[in-house]
Image (cartoon, rainbow, N blue to C red; front, side, top):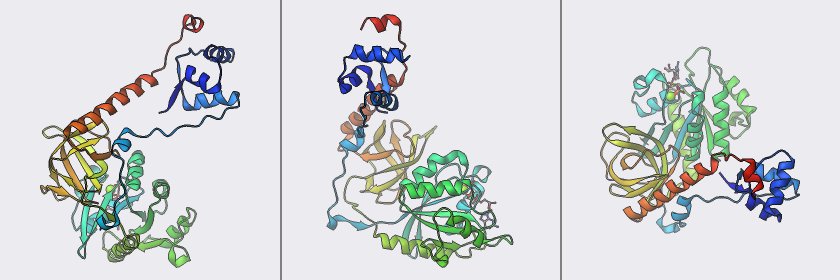
Length: 370
Ligand code: GTP
Ligand code: MG
């Protein structure tokens, strides 16, 4: 978070530091000249002096070090779409994905609630599509936000017997904020109480007007139980993905996002990552926030050991120094040394920010010794 000291602010305002300290004291704000102010406080003070303070974008160290060069058109190859499945709790996201994968993940999940983002690639008529599952539970807002940010298409699952609910609305907002196209899957159509028209009606309020109602939003009635509508849903996903002409350059160092990560007793930090551009390889030195390391082993979504992972591929990696945060970007460095140095500068920066955020106590002595 951006911050500024009283002294620096005084300079910006063209005042003497001690004058600003006195002026603030008169208003009941006891701050010494070295006290740091967060942006909002500093902006409010500046406003009293008719100065509008603007925040300078603090560029991420990683973004600067690993600034991405634009790919040459000739290096770009088609890549699979990344599709996030979002919606209210229990509306059937995991069940729909299971039905698509012909597997059965729901039964294995603790209490049937998705605890983390699962990431899988599914071949549909020989075309790969990468799906990310997200939890609908209200406690997982950040995961839904991340999910929306790293994807091309969002499948909004709405149970036909329940309609638009709070996390449905939240998912719509995340997808819109991330500029991701929404395809609505009206699920549980097998239920006698299913009312797809009501769902469409409710969605209008959030700017999603179904195609058969004269709007632009693709709505597909489906059932994870009877598998009705699944083929149409997949067709729509492929259609929308094709229109987007998604491309990436597999012939360069990888970069992407941490989807989830945890500490495994035997294996150390384990992270599921989504490669967004380039190709990730075993042995690559990588950095993700303050975590760094050489990739020791890589497993695909079916649990198989792999040596490489290209664009839009989710893989689990081993070899990081610590557990990165889900949502962090990861980058492949030039060599081990660079990876370590960059991570160390992030650790130093984090420490510096922490010190800055610690409130400073001010005594009267401090005030008058300026
Ligand atoms: P969270 O991950 O907890 O947000 O839930 P979810 O959206 O992944 O829902 P999940 O797939 O776990 O399904 C919730 C319940 O709805 C389960 O009992 C499913 O069996 C049931 N269910 C899911 N899809 C259908 C469907 O199409 N028809 C019927 N009748 N039940 C369904
Ligand atoms: Mg689920």
